Image (cartoon, rainbow, N blue to C red; front, side, top):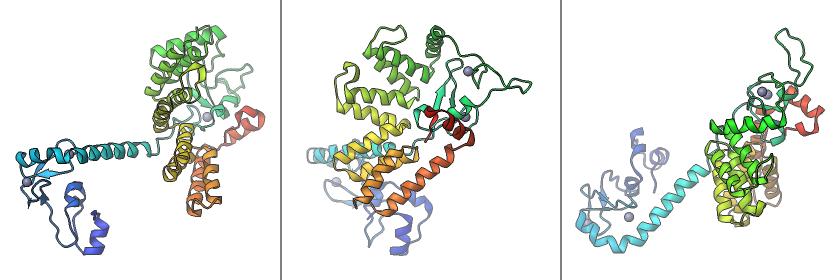
Length: 338
Ligand SMILES: [Zn+2]
Ligand SMILES: [Zn+2]
Ligand SMILES: [Zn+2]
Ligand SMILES: [Zn+2]
């Protein structure tokens, strides 16, 4: 049995203090229904049960011995099991990180509302490098006297949009300061060979990886897509693709998350597919909601799961909806934000 405060109290009527929650799993494993043997361990080699059995396998930390001699004697026998313990522990740790809801993206720098996940609904300004929402982007800009400014000026820094050549220069300067979005853009220039840069897909991938490290989830996502689709002549490598999708998903890319969900579904791991899609839905990925709905309609998911996904999407909408964004969306097709 595994110990948790609840089941111990209910099943065995033992009141344990909350500090017992902190005891290691090794001890919990040695607790039998009849005997609460906190502190007692069994030697994996000779079977001796005592509180003196403290010599833990330093690799897997899962088995204990009375002494170094028992440990040595058991080494060969334990080797395979030990490797398996280590592998499982690593996989468990990885999954704990992977299936955590990532923190929401930074808010719009002007209205301080959550930025929508749809890429067209946010804009990174070439002048100041700030990322703002379409609502703020298209709202009228006023000068200090409160008069509407006639020419198109940046809603954040109020300067005119820089000239085409100047944009590239400004972007390069930002790359040098470690700006994640600028690093991503630079990767795009290299990958596609645009804005006067010689096409160099390796360099493009490298910049995208760096953007990912700097916190820009789309950086990792684009690397994943390149390995997935072979875009730009990159050799298709699904193992690498999923590795980068995972990195992107953990940084908050709902698109990468949705792809991971599809891969798990195709491998028959529905439970893992659902987990990915649920996280993607909470971050605004509407299509993941559709995946969950399809599974529900086919009888593979309960209504509860589907209802939870729906609620989760509503919560997301509650965080991103605004009148200003609605107005921008009504006026410009590319400003649709959900
Ligand atoms: Zn022993
Ligand atoms: Zn071991
Ligand atoms: Zn805004
Ligand atoms: Zn600006």
